Image (cartoon, rainbow, N blue to C red; front, side, top):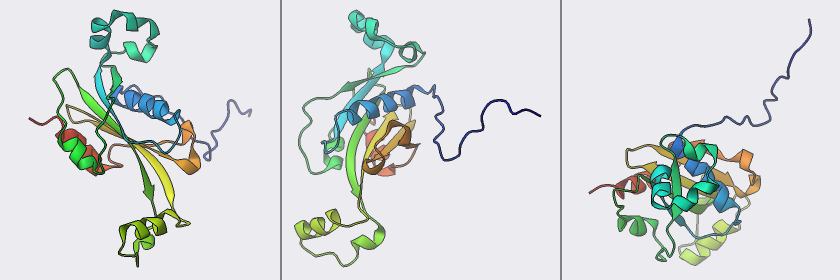
Length: 188
């Protein structure tokens, strides 16, 4: 009996195409932000229906791809000039979106360390940060968290150690605190 086709290697990531407009928008944002490298400040995006954007700006339709023409497609509009703040909560707590915005996305970089790294830290915040920053188990990650006004969410996670488009993890609640904070920007 002959063998037809190839058996997928379980070690190789399997790329599954997505048709979900929110996930497509989040992936486009993630790749856009990743192209600028690491050590970036948080970036905020409004997600608007692509059809409405093209209706308002007809010159944009020349650069559209097939997924941009799908029903419900979302386009990301970066919000320039974010106010510098040490607290994402305070930044997001002051946001409110007009009805034309159907969703929002935030990119943020974080440092993660194993739980034991946080034991016996110096009381001085700067000294504690230095200990954590130099910890051998430290990992740098970038999160993209996207939500819609209707309540859907997508979270993407890229590790600096595995900085490839095919190594981006995805899930609806990888960053539940940020998902909640972004959803709150749509509450009246």
